[in-house]
Image (cartoon, rainbow, N blue to C red; front, side, top):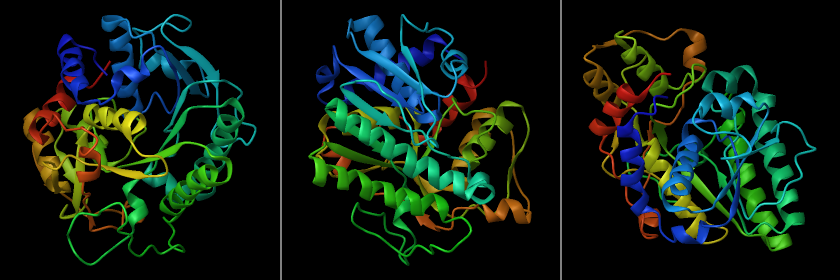
Amino acid sequence: MRYLNEYWDDVKRVIPHIPNLHDLYGKSILITGGSGLICSCVVDIIYYLNQHDNAGITIIHAARTHEEPEDRFPHMKEGVDYEFVYYDATKAEGIDVASDYIIHAASNANPAAYVAEPVETMAANFIGLNSLLSMAKDKGTKRVLYISSSEVYGQKDSMEPYHEDDYGFLDILNQRASYPSSKRATETLCVAYSMEYGMDTVIARPGHIYGPGVTPFDNRATAQFTRNAVAGEDIVMKSAGSQLRSYCYALDCATALLAILLAGKSENAYNISNPDSIITISEIAKFIADAAGTKLTYENPDDAEAAGYNLMSNSSLDSKKLESLGWAAEFSPAEGADRCVRFYGD
């Protein structure tokens, strides 16, 4: 991720879309998965607020190694700009730290791993969240935001966008079901803690998020498109790319998460989708290819690649519930693709 001045201009640009933002000032927030594509932008926004608006927000990075935040945020210093706590989502013992808010984003987001490591995928989702919720209950945390997935919806016949209560069929015995099945279960776990212990939990369901902060190990389609484009290589589609998706640029997704955290209704789930970016996989690939001046080509996938594919032909999301909180997306697909290419890298 290249922290150019233009990137910080974009951070400033999206901040007005966060409702009740001052409720976060002077508070502490524990973030798991803070070095990933989505929550790294949340960290960037909070860091910017601390630097430019004296927000006084304490960032607590929960990660497996000190190197994760150090590598992702070279401009930030441990002990000054953030605190570090060890956390492994697959371990039941969890962590022991008090914070006002928790955003839980640590999860296996690698489609190939859903097939190769289904046990670890399910364990990280369920065990990891349970340990955090248990800690939050004991520590009196104000609210826990769980980042789920649009894959909880399963499949339906129509091409209309999914609303938050619009569930379709999910084959729980499919080799790839470890991810959506465990996401469904952990959403129920959030509500269970709210019902049994009176905890304040809220859920975000992001669509397909893209941005320049993808890691070298991220093999989701848009991550591969971005790396290929920046390297000057053609973007190779391993399908016709006709599946309809809800795309959202990472900074827009970050403001959506903060909007849900600060203004969402407890025990509710909110779709994260840019209504102007409901397009096919091939269309987002074309935007990224055009931004880099490369070509878009097509090849047949091998068996391993095909096994990891999202089975949903339509995973478009209705975002009206989120927008009712006062949130709005800022970046068009063309703008987002331009940022992917310009800001990707060291």
